[in-house]
Amino acid sequence: MRRAERRGSILIISLSLVAILSILAVAVARQLSLDVRLTKYRLAHAQAAALARSGVYLAAQRLTRDAAEPDGKTYDWLGDEWAVFPRRDPEADAGVWVVPAPDEAEVRIRISDEGGKLRLNDATLDQLGRLTADDAVAQAIVEAREAKGGPFAAPEELGDVPGMTPELYETLQRHASPYPASTEPVNLNTASAEVLRAAGLTEHAVQLVLAYRDGSDGAEAHEQDGVFTEAGLAILQTLKDAEGVDLTGTEDGNLLSSGLFGVSSSVFTVASEGALGAPAVRVQVEAVVRRAGCGEGGPEPCIIAWRERRALES
Image (tube, rainbow, N blue to C red; front, side, top):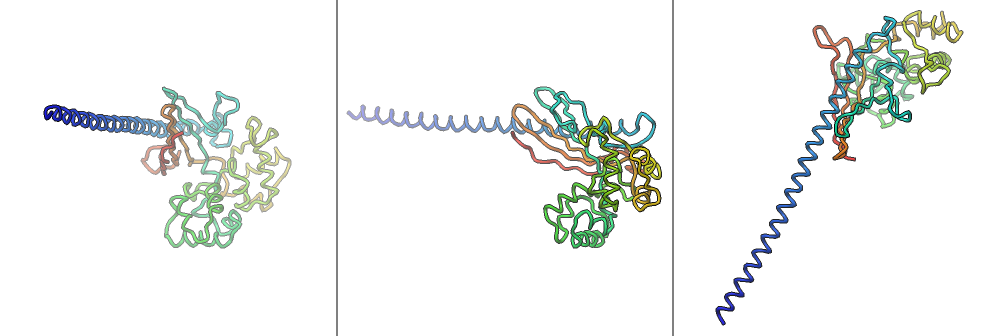
């Protein structure tokens, strides 16, 4: 009887040990599976980040190649090689350069011109007031610029300006830039209507410039765009020839032919996204690239600002 009881006890203990070991085995298997997934995700994140970073350097190379035009002049416009890319899909966004990579990966690159924006670090109170339609915030920006004793280094610094709202911040980020030097004129070929108005042009002059730039096929197509290829008085002659309006001697004419406006750009923002298909991971990088004027002895182009966004999983 006792022997049978001992055998029963041993059996129960053995079954308990088997159950415990089974639970431990399941727990270990789950942990290993989680570790494998995490490792796979981290590897995918690293690959996507590398693709995104490579996109910045591809864009910089494209900007360098596009610096001189076939006619020997130097100008940048919204239908330029850095702004519009060949599309495999006619419905795709022509402003995005899609570069395929192995294993269903790709890099998506968009280049935008900082040269067509208002110079944040030397914009006058009147210019900032016209851009923001808020004199108090315009005054606060000028005071903040003076108080810091130096230029704004990044748009994010505007978030600390008294009275700043998300809407005003977005307007300033889209139409004003701290990156071009104060000696670099605003690119008339890429400046938005908001920037042209903020610079002091009348609505009549703004519409003349836009009509010439857009051509008869509208703002979204570029086959018939007009391009300002030379600055100064040549701008007035171009408008006279194309639109039949002579602005010589007017306030608009004096402003357009002044050193405030040019026809080329040196600083661009590159938004690059590296994307993997499996696992579906995307990493975004935004870099500000200076194509020329990087400083004596410095390599050109050069990167003057860099932001890496967190990984996004589809």
